[in-house]
Length: 213
Image (tube, rainbow, N blue to C red; front, top):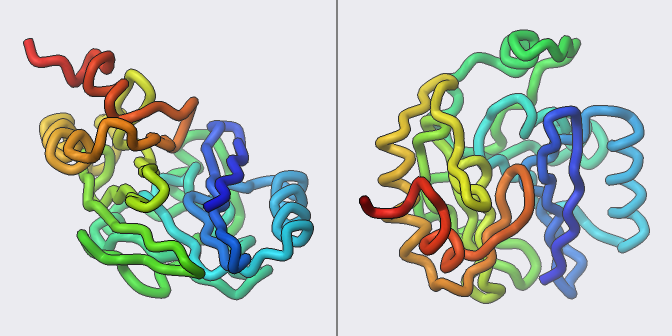
């Protein structure tokens, strides 16, 4: 599997474009908000001859969904995410609270993703892991074959997601991380919603939030 990482919008979201030899592709957390970012993404998709099959959201915080409308308008693909995140304020309201006025609403889900669902495209299969705490319906996407997991804002390199936003809860988040993410093999590469990648083993050993005192 190929993974192309874009860093989009003023909040520096990692948007992941993943694809395999079939040229079928999935986007995780499309944060492309400006025309320049959208053009960059579109040009890359075109240059590689990719066919977008899935638009996945780890969660619905505004910085992770800013590009969903663009993807729908361009490729006709609607997002998929966990139903629990529909309880959060809508895109315009969230973005406005953070000082990002936007004029459009987000696209609602084509279908909801549940815990342990398999999301497939091409020869690739992602296992959805419900990892709430940063948001009520936060998902991580695990690719066992390629030894990697996309954790959104649940787990970062040496950090965890903030829990002071809608539906956030640190106790729930730590439980999610320990039961769903730290149980993955240590060599699993961790691709977070912001910042550099890591591994599960590295976070077990060195993440200050995960050390048993």
